[in-house]
Figure 1 (cartoon, rainbow, N blue to C red):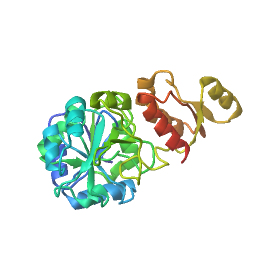
Figure 2 (cartoon, rainbow, N blue to C red):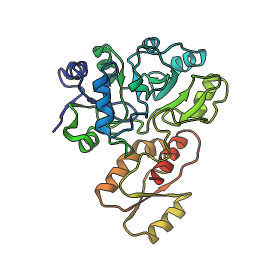
Figure 3 (cartoon, rainbow, N blue to C red):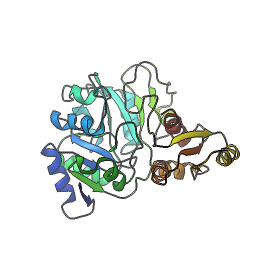
Figure 4 (cartoon, rainbow, N blue to C red):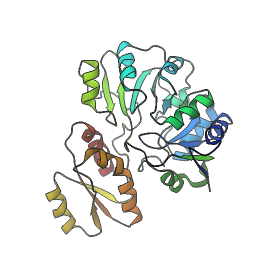
Amino acid sequence: MTNTIHSSADGAIDQASEVLNQGGLVAVPTETVYGLAARSDIDNAVERIFTVKGRPSGHPLILHVAHADDVARYVDSIPHPAKILADHCWPGPLTLLLKKSNNVSHIVTGGRETVAIRVPANASTRLIIEKCGHAIAAPSANKFGRVSPTTAQHVEADLGSEIELIIDDGDCSIGVESTIIDLSSDRPQLLRPGGFPLEDLEAILGSSIDPPAGESRASGMLASHYAPRGSVVLAESIDQANDLLQQTPRSRILDHYANLPMYAASLYSQMRQADNDGIAVIIAVLPPQTGLGRAIGDRLNKASLA
């Protein structure tokens, strides 16, 4: 079994950074989901992320740094909108896509000239990165395309003995992945809705953010993703969900649909519990497509397509 230690345990930060510096893989907590981390400058370690997850090598990873000031090391330039968002939103659940510097391997970026980067809000993980002395590449710590992990126990169930260390910091507070904004061209684009609401980002920038256009170039942009073993059926209302429940054997309605922060925080845990309980059909009420509801709806829609 993988060694799991609590973030507050003596030596936890040192042990995690040592494993990373030796080219190992560490599952680290963030406010969004648990990430599967490798030092981004150790190519063999980054390649192991793809192998362990079963992730296509062309699907880029997100870099995590300890401080906003560290971003300049990994990007070619920092446009003014990126500076504004970094000042207002970091540490936090926002990822920016920028033109990469030569310090970032094409293995991390899936061969692209852009890199996704963020400063996580989890203090333990920032300390690990700081101690490590280099950015970490860290997608979600689960098998590719499946339900993301929001507890250390989820990571253990998915990855077992395939990685060296899991840092346990309890449940993730937000529960859905970071928002990704592409700032590598003239107009900002929303590539993935997430823990930072689009409306708030537009208010901070003082301008609108366009929907995505062009190829998939960041985590979570594929049409099918975040999928439990059971099928996911979407309902427009709780009344419709209850009708489906009556008509569908071995089905369950996801709870907390009326409370968006709780819905997001519990979404993946509820899906995993349904799988563990042998539920064949997971019925999910679609939230209003504003604020955090946009991210929840994105995850539900992609899960329903699997």
